[in-house]
Image (cartoon, rainbow, N blue to C red; front, side, top):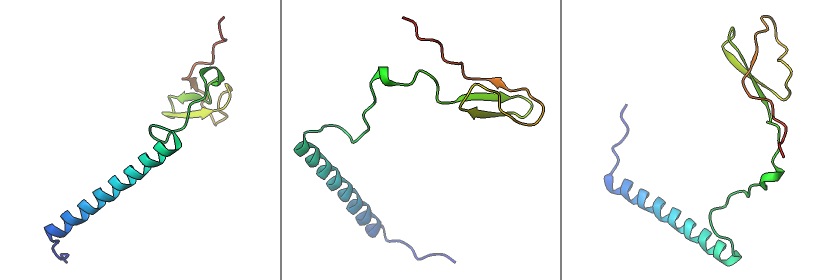
Length: 98
């Protein structure tokens, strides 16, 4: 069962109203940023480079027989059924030099 045909004018008007609403929201965000003294998009600030963790968050292992990867929080092999053919894909952290 076919739906009723849309009118081109109605589609065009709806799209134009949506575009105007987005532009108005954008204008409001700009005004709020100007009033508060901030500039740019609303994004998180990154921590300083020295504060980042030296170790990777997780170690990724690969099993050729299973054709899958598995992430673990430590360097120990995943505890699964045989065969135990896990290969470490991510390198362990190197000691800081200097």
